[in-house]
Length: 203
Image (cartoon, rainbow, N blue to C red; front, side, top):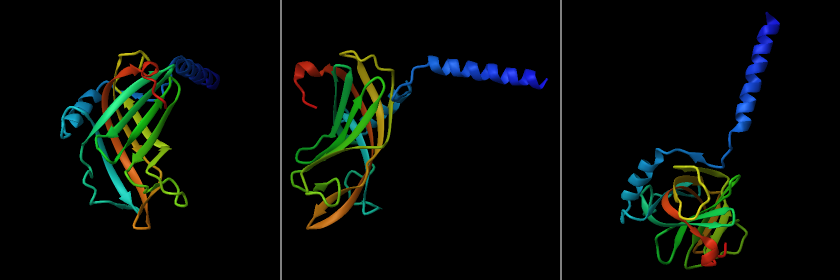
């Protein structure tokens, strides 16, 4: 009896293992139902036609209640490009002098998410002891990417998704005072894949 139970458990284990090995492991989640959520959040922006970014900023570990965009759906411009076997999705706040956003670097096996912020003055530092600059960019270890469908890596295919990220601490300088910043961001994007090679885009 004990031997029969052991054999049954072993067979089930082997079946699960073989099934798992046959499944493709994607570096992102796939959920066809997110299309409605993406559309709703885009319609909640001022333009109702661009993409959307929603963010919550903390300064010195306290939520910045004075941030004009706190919890709001802000207009964002998003583009997606295919270069060799890599997709680059770049989305930035639709602003003139200062902006922030994210870049997704996606292959069939891996997903890297970078946060970036640009200002018209040298105010940003990745580390407290760095020299301030007008632009910073760094990877985010806390991220979650969900797409509405599995990508085929083909020019022209639609790309629709939701990105959730939390930045590492970085620094902003104002009146010679260092402020520790952290941002929690959600991006809602909908675009089509373009050919990066023909546009001569340097990543």
